[in-house]
Image (cartoon, rainbow, N blue to C red; front, side, top):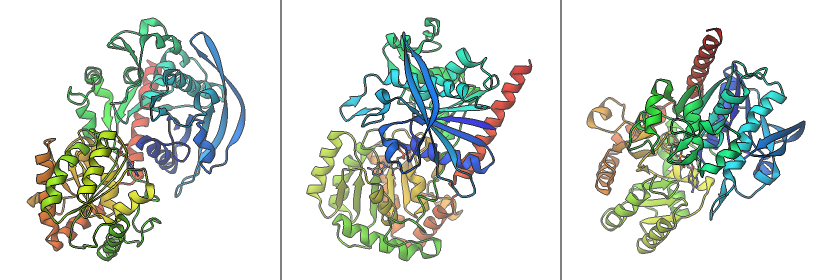
Length: 499
Ligand code: ADP
């Protein structure tokens, strides 16, 4: 099948979050299954430092944006070959007024004010590129609000173009909290008829909602875990769009993200002071823990469980719960903590204050550091993810691969990946971590207490780690599910065309 994979961020060209990792790993995994995938993404300023060869294509894009026409061009690059796959072509949409900026979507002060225009341009450019290059497309696979207009344009404007007559569309929701909502006059930028600005289609409480376009117009929808696909149909998790999602539930499914084994593998991780695998787990982790404690300025205490949090310091990730329980734990328990992340200033401040108060118990690093994130996975004993909602979550899967036992709130992808260490699950060698349901400091503390109790029984702890290490989080596994979904879309489109 020919897949056009449209994403607003792709490692190594650009990244603000997990979407960039998915867009870098899934296309090569699909290619190794024999699919023809072309990735298309904006040529931000960061693409020039990606370390990939980039060459111009002799193609001019003329894209209508409201009453004007905006010119752009195309560049060609590729994703590095992965394992058995050939390298995947990447098309970069160049429009320097829109994309040659420091950030992808904004500055630390806030979002760019012309984000609607920037991604209307990109969404139109995706299909215009397919038309101009005569790309055969079986499925155009779009992600999040930035490309959510593509299924709408495909259905409304591009259906008659050669190569696109039978193209189907898949829209993947990576995080429903980000919807691309703009004031209603931005509808003019889209070039779509006002008749689509109604509560069943692009309108949402008087505003233009780009994500909703994807939800309404795509042939199939999916999210990044089966549980999140269910949760977003409820008012607690649906962010106001639960009604639309309920209506489309027959075409909505969940596929877990995978882990890039070339990046997250303790046996070959270049950031670790000592590599290890299942057979050397105990000594390897001990060495990594000692080095991490030294790096963080924590006492060299092999017996003290080292609990880690790496992630955005926001309420979504439950850092407020961690801040709540920390003083009591730091005062009373022989447990060490490390927090690595950036986010809301109020959490920065609270964590710095706690680190000053408990310098021998808590190390705080308010930065983005890929290297330290790897060393924390290697050296920590437990990994905390008390998220309020979690579409998939990657760190719990990295943690399992590193024998770092996850402690998670039972939500979204965390439910689908972490099996709570009940006595039965431990006895059956099924348990892969600790989970708690209620979103409260008390429930988090109770899960931590259970984890620390098991940690003090080394034999049982080792067995739990061994089960974690055995889990298969490969992209091959996810790619096979996406392949089946694409096939389904193609068959459905074929039938629709013959009726
Ligand atoms: P989300 O995409 O919602 O932020 P995920 O768990 O899906 O959460 O992915 C987050 C990724 O970003 C993980 O790989 C995590 O290790 C990484 N990450 C988050 N914050 C930091 C940080 N401060 N330093 C290094 N890596 C980070």
